[in-house]
Length: 91
Picture 1: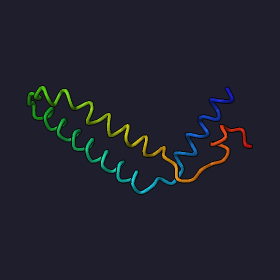
Picture 2: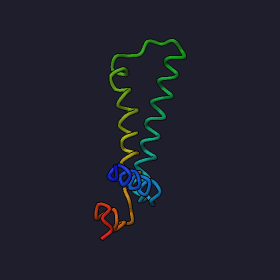
Picture 3: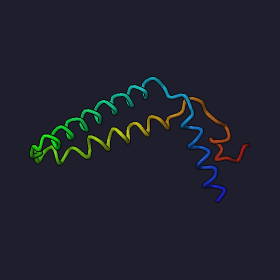
């Protein structure tokens, strides 16, 4: 149970950490791609149009991949926490 508690503390500290500029651009690019994909999908559905087969195939990837990129970029830390590096041993 102690490992789970430590894991949550590590995730929380990484979420609050300063994200490097390069990774901020990755997050922005991912938001732009997925936002555009959602807008296109909503326009197709609300207009009653039949979606092309290729769109049905790539749509989940246009949403999922940028979300994964954003999560990885957000969890990339600038500062190093000694306690985290030592797996919580604090040594």
